[in-house]
Picture 1 (cartoon, rainbow, N blue to C red):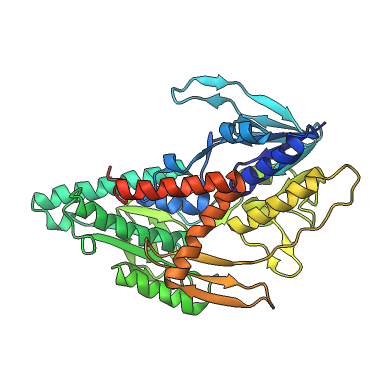
Picture 2 (cartoon, rainbow, N blue to C red; picture 1 turned 30 degrees about the horizontal axis):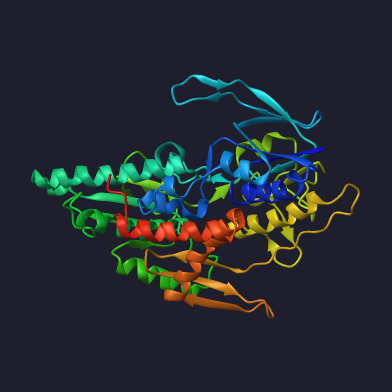
Length: 433
């Protein structure tokens, strides 16, 4: 019986483990093992809602052990620190508990086929001081750190205002990067500031005292969308009181602000870096062919060009589609690659491997609780349709439901939807502490 090890339980890795477990795992044709350093899965495109307090991660996380028990695969918690390609084993670092004690020692897991679904990490582009002085949104833990710092900063500024210190009553939030993450977080933070004021968590003016500034080095926000939608998004953010600055590159970052390439200083209470991503450092240590972003170069079958027993999917993979070009680091790409590999790895030994084809079905960006913009790609002649307003918001929400459908099936997805609807009517729209 073959052993298929999947490293990384993100959008692609968990879906692949679920599908392979349901087919090859339950039938006894393969042993499927999922490895991740965290005990639960959270859909990464929604991390900005955790950072803003609009979503409690405990209500949305999927525990890997529970998913494994119901879908015919195994879960092993740990962080991969090395891969021995000669002996076909991966080495996991010791698992240290919250109390600092060792729960499990370092251990090895053997594989016949290895799938790397390691996701991505923040790319600081070697900007001086960025790695040391900014917050990022690479995980739920990091999103929670940002949320708590934001709420705490608002409470502290409100106290200074009550003591008659008008100069110290401002909260300056700088978000570097005008892509989807930066735009979505800026819009949600504006809503959070208003909600915290509504519940008297702070006594600040949500626009004048909570200053959100979005910096983008390019000419437009959301460069992957049509310029008309980019301008529409910028107008909407400005209508919320958010300062949008394009053509602004960051030269250096300090603990309380930054300098742009023109020499202008931007004071900051909190700085969030969302300017780009790259593959984790582990990818560059495996002896596999990688690109300048450390992404593993794969061929048409999603196998590494350096080792046919290793596959890579999602943000850590560099696949160039003959039709669409370089596949972008998006959840829909990871979903399609998981579907492809679930079929390819379940085939009998000796069967000719198929080739992966990527289809771009569009992209949507949230502009807060009530707005969104995006592009929907049609299946006829590849036409693309620009969508905004209520239709765009509905499609954006359905993207997450589609993810739940792939992992749980229709009945449980519907139950989650009803539970979310009830919860939204019983609790405040953001976490207040």
